[in-house]
Length: 272
Image (cartoon, rainbow, N blue to C red; front, side, top):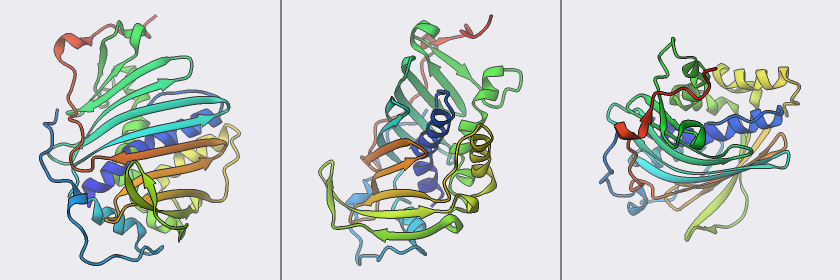
């Protein structure tokens, strides 16, 4: 279950960070071998589980327990600006997550982020000469590492989803199954009370509130679950920021690898 919680946390955390920074008037960004495990969708459940408020998070966690990877797409619009991203997530040996993501950002163009082996790599296009900066999030002497602290912390499953059960106030089925990239998936509306989120998650909201962002009393998300209760799509409209994510290839996603040595630069584009 820990792996599945880690998996879902990655794009959701990036989307939430983008939403908060966009609403506050600023824009910021967010090796494993290919998995050979069969897709979790290949194993049909013997008996359908009725989704309720009490079992929602546990049910999707259980459904994804055997999936060690997925591909995702994400699109976000806020204040007339748009961000798009595509990527893959793998769970490395020991449970750490590996991420490969390409983003299109307002005023910055394309940016690529990879997280593998405990290190973060960022390709900022012309700013980094088309190569990747290698950043150790634990390196206190690197000022860039401090800027990644929040992102890597949100990805940590103990901070991203732990305690979220207490924040869920309702889960409601919203109609019949729909086609999501060729898979039938049923929509569920999930309402959260942000005041009941874990302290680590509320910290970002508190910062946004301090910057003048009006925090709603409830967060409303829609999840589309397939017949095996795997998340196929997620959407939310939060503080003027609309986000939609899709998930595919559970258990058989594209591999995630760290850049090779000749793809890495040691030049800090922000040094002045």
